[in-house]
Amino acid sequence: MIIRQLCRRQGRALFGAVRPSFQSRYHSTETETVAQISQSTDPIQAVQPKASAEEQPALSEQFRNLTARRVRFNELGSQVKSAYEPENLLRSPPGPSDITLELLLASQSHLGHATSLWNPRNSSYIFGIRDGIHIISLEVTAAYLRRAAKVVEEVARRGGLILFVGTRKGQRRAVVRAAELAQGYHVFERWVPGSITNGQQILGHCELKVVDEFDNELPRYKENVSEQPVLRPDLVVCLNPIENEPLLTECRAYNIPTIGIIDTDADASMVTYPIPANDDSLRSVAVIAGVLGRAGEAGQKARLQQSRTGKLPYERVSMKKLMPDSEGSS
Image (cartoon, rainbow, N blue to C red; front, side, top):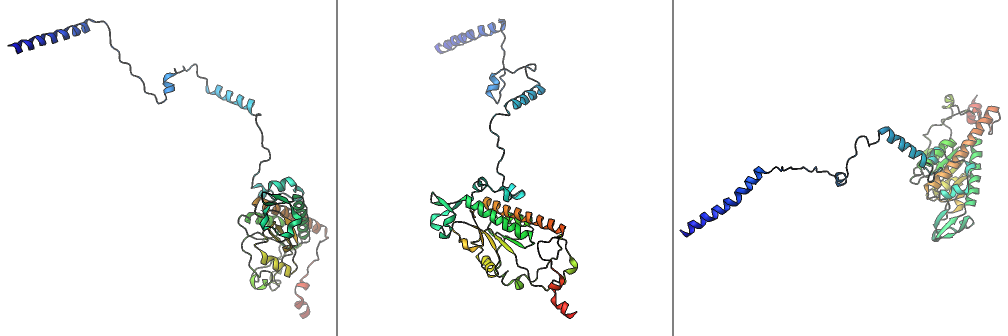
């Protein structure tokens, strides 16, 4: 009995506490609102109020403001007018008149090798020592480069054959470009030993091209000169003499003048006309090859101009001199 009365008493208290809350809820005038907060990826945009469409500037006005700022601030800062582009040395290489100390300095032509690798025969070309490296005198380089350019121009003016040789990696385009300007020949791979001393066996299968004084081909004389001995170059320009010592030895055997880039570790007596400069820098090699190519181009133009006037700078070659046997048989 005691337990039953206790449960009744607790049940009345429970329902009595809940009933007024339901009644007050139904008689109340307040309403509950549930606001959904939009989840934005950018918390700053969620906090800042959005501007109305009237406050946002039009697209045309934004473009005008941007153009005005460009005009106003365009003149500020430095302007680099003469920037270095490697392709310019191939597209438009400098000529002999463009040789300056600034150009040679920018192309790193003054940097030699370590002092422990120097050749004593290059003592007259060395300006000094810095950080254990010999510095080449650019005044001597400019003078010797102008002299070599004059030699190339004169050989081209007299109709001589000029051979450009550069077998190091990266020298191919500079060698080909210089040969195109001077209308010469080029070798950018390994030099075949004996191409000059034993040229009949190595180059005897090559065809000869017969041209007149205006460089017009004469195909009717091709059969007459097919049995002639191979031609030898009148001038050889070597961009890396150290690796092409067999070539220079063959040139000395046949008294062929040579032009070469002589670094501080090379022997200046290897070539006839040395050019003291850095032979490891591709930019330095491209500048020197371009100058010599431009000199050959000027010589070819001078030769054609003299040919138009009838005054040939070389002795005219006749078929009687090429084929003396045919003259005796006739």
